[in-house]
Length: 401
Image (tube, rainbow, N blue to C red; front, side, top):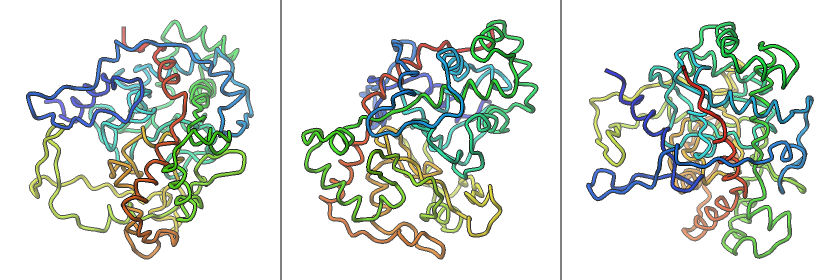
């Protein structure tokens, strides 16, 4: 019997929300006969070209110039996009990069806390959104890689992701697909190899720049009417509550991250705090609380896994907050479902323990202040998220012929 998680994953990854990009259909009331889905088939989406090369040359309002050691071309971006959607990059031709980084789900995946890989194998970390990933100094939640060209081999070779046993397996499979050899020569004037494959996928991911949010138009553009007073109050709270010390804002731009690693309590709670009966989801909207089904325990020590340093235990990379309203679930393990819950987690001071970042403290926000903070976070959604999703859908779904 095929694992239930895999069946659900395949079904859900073939559906998107009625709007090109949104927080998603929560499937409230799914168990009732009167339930009507807000999703539709991916095949019904219409692709439309976005000038990704222009984005790289002139990032949207609120983003800094992108420092590039090598200049992407339209050919390299188009090739990278094609590869991103090609299931033949996985060992059994079933899984593409885009199945865990779904364009209509913020180039992440909101259906599952942690994605399902090849043959239904599970992972321990949330699928991070790819917006503005080209600015990151460290990649993966534990920061174990520092360039996108190198990073791509992590998921390609991971046993529980795309499952390839060796680099040569991937390269030889691509060499056997007739349309790829001329495409690589056009993009890089070289054959398919470890370096050129990394460059192609990296060039596409770097082009996924998203800014010009309502916040940007107010804060950097000087348009007072771009946001309402609740957003402005929420931003003031964001500053005085010390959130911006990790989710940094500069004078000319904001990436909303310090690219550093912090222990906020989630890793400690998952490893050390007993949660009693487990809530098991049988289907969207259908749950049962039981001790009979043990929760999978993943020993995730965060940054420690990349450095081996004891002081890095349970530290995870600070995520950027751009498009945060459309990229749930949250935290490194996807353990928090909504922004309201995230705000409440920090409002209560995280999960206090020795080693927790000293900036995490009880905020004692009023209900109105929580709403203002939420309004600010929702104002960080870029103006081009739908354009990026539509552009992505121009890529063919590569699969075994």
